[in-house]
Length: 212
Image 1 (cartoon, one colour):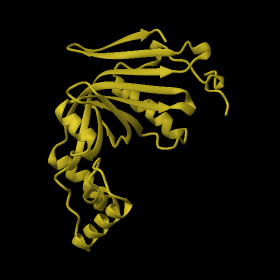
Image 2 (cartoon, one colour; image 1 turned 90 degrees about the vertical axis):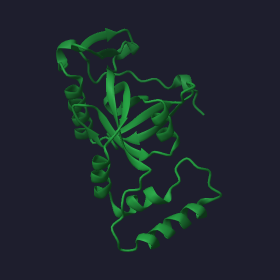
Image 3 (tube, helix red, strand yellow; image 1 turned 120 degrees about the vertical axis):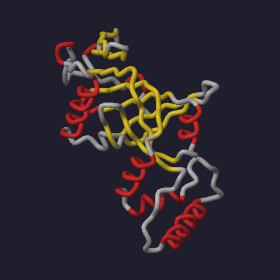
Image 4 (cartoon, helix red, strand yellow; image 1 turned 180 degrees about the vertical axis):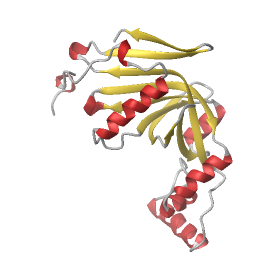
């Protein structure tokens, strides 16, 4: 196997200057996300979500961004899952969008709020029926005896709802990460990358350059 320290790429696809950025980082993020979409990246809305227990033990996983608005970053999950329980107990999180083929990355830190019942219902009703059944069938983060147990749960809920409309389970819904920090990273040669970070203040957003 090739030695890991032999993997090395020079990032030459762009640069990031203060004059390139919008005053509002949410608008800047939407611009970068559109570039990622236009670049035909696989699941450009995939993001690493890091949460923590109240005791400070972190965990991370990849989830999908489902909405970006002026308030923050929206995604959906099972409230009883590990991440769901951690976010309810300790409502702060970090996100990372890694768009490696275009040598860009965005880091987000902020506080978390649950979406309203109405907003969660609206999104759930737009999901494919199979995904709606899956939200009922999966006791997310719980230990299973085997795959057959999960398949049996799926079949039981398919039979329960039959051809009826599938309601949103009360343990499933949306969260929004309301950012206090957003960092934009552009790869550069010699590992001297561009890092520009916005911080939320009472007056608005400030912008600073960080050493790579």
